[in-house]
Length: 314
Image (tube, rainbow, N blue to C red; front, side, top):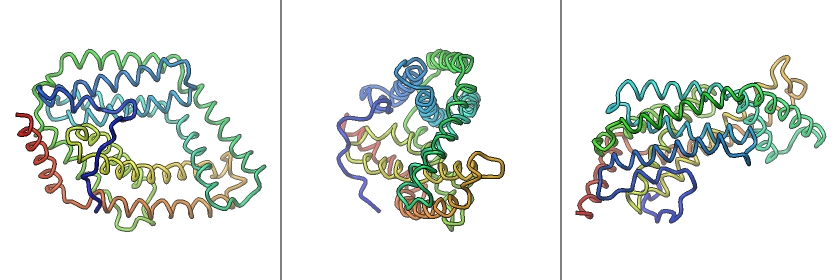
């Protein structure tokens, strides 16, 4: 188990949830409101930035919505049904953009395969890349339409108004710690006994919980300058390994009968399986470190750190 007591990064990447650690003189809930506003701002930027291509905009919007859903999961108990409904609607908005993302995932998997010995010529690889690019661009034109952008914009407007009504300042750290522990427990329970034989759907579910856990832990990382960096790096590393497996699964789908990459199936599948096994070997090792503690011990750890920090600032 690595030490989770390393110095944190002085500068966080754009779009993180630094706001949740702020307002040292206020409630933890005040920080949650700041985090929520930052997420909404990032989503709006992705929708309106003329520098982004449609695939890039889809990627950025989906990232923001994942962070938003992770936050709503934490707020499920204090906010009740409204948080559940808004999380469900955000999921539907993400699914509406998934066709364009699926093709991009397959392109990412193709790039990953280049780290192995490719079983065909550079010309064939370029043909495969070209077909996937065409699929991605076509999907973007049919899914990321002006109507879809408008629906996303209306959702963000509603989320902004909702923030003004939610009693976030009244939310204490114990409530958040319970939510963090619940997500940690869900992810830990999904760890497969045999990683190499785990079904893609199971690994996808695990990745979703890991993504949620990583975003939720991002909320509390700035609270303690010696807690977060290594923990978040491990969570991100696990997320990346499982994401690579998901990308490879998308590529496999495109090799099925009557699919665009069917002519290359017999040569693609062996190298895909090799790369998948390598990613899963790393994922198993990282997950063993990240989820080594039982949920109760995890809850005790973060509660103790919060208590220590509060005592320091009195």
